[in-house]
Image (cartoon, rainbow, N blue to C red; front, top):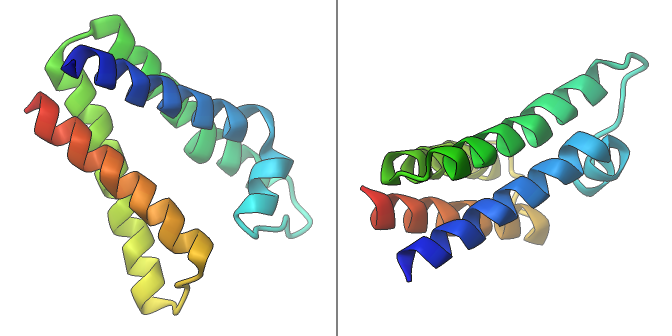
Length: 116
């Protein structure tokens, strides 16, 4: 059962990463981000919200060992910590922000608990 849930979590990770990587305008719109006149924002979205998650997910599938799946869990834990920090310190507690935090935290908790 853990193997199946790991694969589901990683496929979700890759799919979400592909959205950021291949559709930065869509991703920026969903995250309420706007370019400031340069194209740097697009490269940041493609890298940090896209290809990073695609690469981590593909790496976990390639290695197929608990430590690799746990590492993706650490990635989500870092994202969740960053998100909750922004929610609390920047008064950014919209339903969308909380929703993203819950998804990140749940994936972190599952991947770490199941694979460490």
